[in-house]
Image (cartoon, rainbow, N blue to C red; front, side):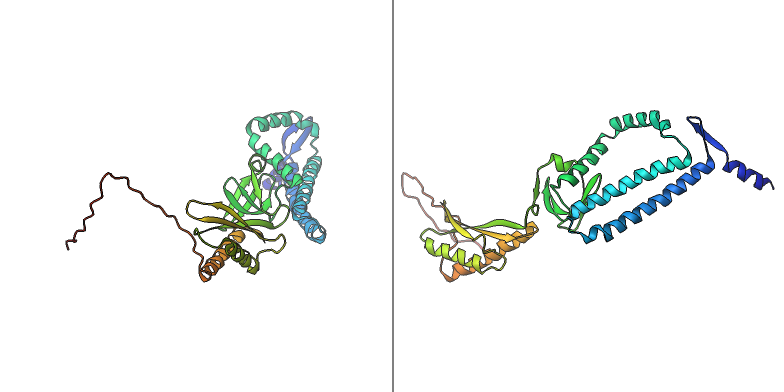
Length: 294
């Protein structure tokens, strides 16, 4: 009988008053339960909205992610306001508390707010999109997720890198796939003096045209770069369709193998550093050969 009396008393016990309105234990518990259930429902609704509606459109994946994020946080704010209404707590009661909270955010959470705003700018301007391959501040990888505070990148070594969104507005970014996937790369080679330069150019062009990964448009070309200290320097320029830097490096490696083999067959020597040493002496040098002692 005692328990039957105490439980209703605790359930209806007043915790505090806000702007003349009493807040009881039952209101707080019901508000928490309502908010948790609403949060689960919002996650389910936004996921279904993304899968069944946004997923069937031609919308860019980054813009699609932005629409989903904005929808989720908008519904979350509405849920919070509705929960306060269910509790019977007027919003005017949070004027002073909200002002103090805003000051605290301004002084203690500048970095967080900076990243939040930077994330919105990145989502709207889209200098970086999901699935783009980027290089930033010495880091290289593919963009997996653009969050409200940070962006997640998977590196070429299959590690995950979390980068604050403000970095994308403060650092120089190389985006390999922002406009298209066509990248120009080159292979430099030096041949020995006395080599047939026209034949060298023909071999370089031939090996570029034989490679399946080299695009025919734009067309490859060869430049006779310079009369070097030890070689006649040529550079072969080609265009490839690459999603990552390793794609370019693989094509470069294939071209070097092919060029080396073709030069050997054509008796064209790839130059190596050479030096002629001149000794300025008054009298002839004395050269003596000594037998090694075992």
